[in-house]
Image (cartoon, rainbow, N blue to C red; front, side, top):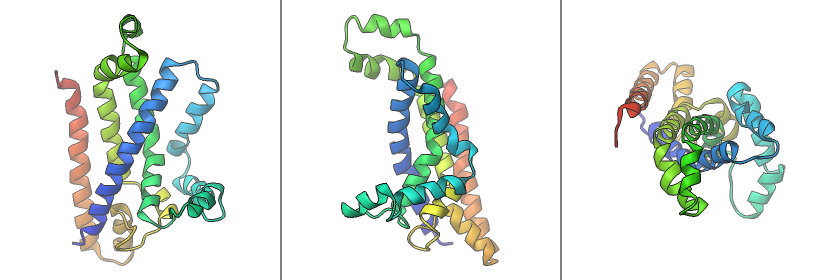
Length: 216
């Protein structure tokens, strides 16, 4: 069994979970704790990757990050190549998983009593309250969102195919490798990769189900 797709997928999922977690926590806090102008529009845009076909999302990202795109031209001028590299797979995974993180963290923040935060702000600054009160009280929901994001990123296919392609030994994630193996009638390779993926994702889902029973 070729282990490269699995190792690449784990690498991509780890990096994208960190990025999606950082962005998702910030966005969720802004949506739940501030009077953000255009909140409904922002929430709708964040949910687009969940409802649009992945190829549509991937196409627009390709247009934006390609050499002729506004972001792609700036990145190329800075010497950073995105399209058809492993970095593109990270971008695809972040875009695909960010809605899951935002919604999970939103629910976690909404479960924190604002009166507790208000009382804490009489003694501490807003950043201190966020780090010492809000995050510790919401940690289960945040961690569940990150775990679900990691699982989603392992299985990302459509956006990754559009942005990174399926280049063996370079950008071929496990989902793409399974598809290519089936297309080439290498069912043994496809079966092994699928089994490994099922085991990893099942373990992550068991972790999510176990989190509510954890007491600190």
